[in-house]
Image 1 (spheres, rainbow, N blue to C red):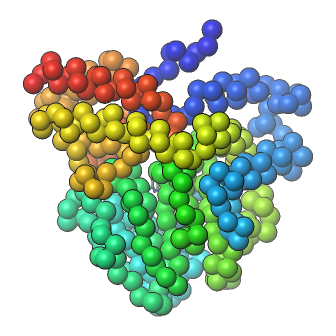
Image 2 (image 1 turned 180 degrees about the vertical axis):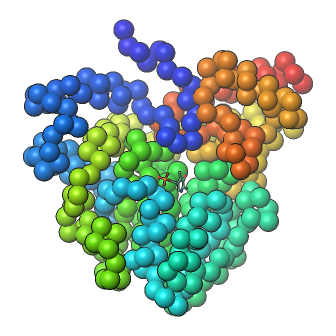
Image 3 (image 1 turned 180 degrees about the horizontal axis):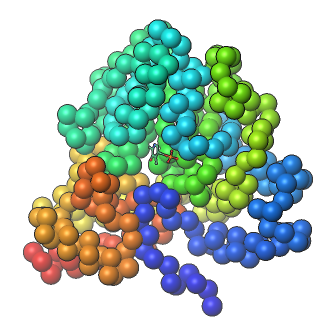
Length: 365
Ligand SMILES: *Cc1c(COP(=O)(O)O)cnc(C)c1O
């Protein structure tokens, strides 16, 4: 019997839910991958079998995300957190500036690393407002000779998401898309570099996707350690050292699943529908539930909310846990509740949460 009916209602923020079809396929192929007599984890990353998996994942990502030909696609390690360091190490120079749009803890972490390499400047911070908002595009200040402007497209902890991106003209734009990459179609050509840990929307942890314009990469500093140069990974097709082979295989399988869903337009529609189920409960609750993010800045990936009072909130989380819901506790820096509704979280899981929230309110109001 399929184990899919024993699956939790998984709202984990990351690592997070994967499509059950993908897990079951991986299980089937695990012990003997395509007749090789071994798993994908047990073979050389230089073997033709692995190379095919690797190259297919890259080409599928290019196609699904409509990545223009003058961009490189890299699979790196070290998570989005290593990108916080690699970006200024490669592109920021002593006494040069870069502008960081501050929309949450992840922006703060990215900014902090940049201070080690040059003179980053914070712009359009919404910290005063507990990061409830995405700043308006007019608030974003940057210099025409900035090395780049950096932003976080979806703020996993606060539950806010950019719906339109600033036009930075000649100044390169970089985005941390860890928690909303490939959740909807976007115009890649607006960006010079995009990065994302795979473990929210694309697969298991261990793989970091970097998409970067070739002529931007050419500007990188030369005198830095080999493994931290983007060019090293470009020149070796992300096979400079042993890559996370199983993670790349899983990423490829998740991309096949996205393709089967009808691509990113279809995924975006599903994501809107899923988030709406939960936001509707919050908005129709007469203040029993309140959202953390202001309405205009709401994320379709991370829905942050509070329950009427602290006692009830505790009870909500306890009863939710007993009812089979996982991952609903808010991040320790915000508290409250958070439902992460990434690509692979099924509509039925969101429907179940909707029903649970309505029933809980009816019982306790
Ligand atoms: C999770 C997350 C990170 C951290 O990713 P790691 O892969 O753990 O380094 C960075 N930025 C955002 C927006 C995230 O959601």
